[in-house]
Image (cartoon, rainbow, N blue to C red):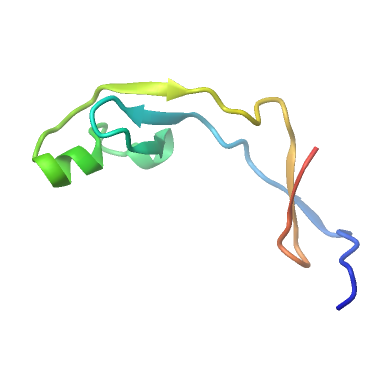
Length: 76
């Protein structure tokens, strides 16, 4: 199998903020949160909890590309 030279790259959007529920510890992105309450607490405990802590992004300041040929993600 020949090695990919990563000649066709696509710029990936930044990861965005991640949030962790203070009750069930579910980690979810801000975009996935949707209704504003924790989906795990809502499904498991029937409680609409909106108490989240923000998790700092470890890849802040990095640029990410995806190779169109092999699908590898490259951090620069």
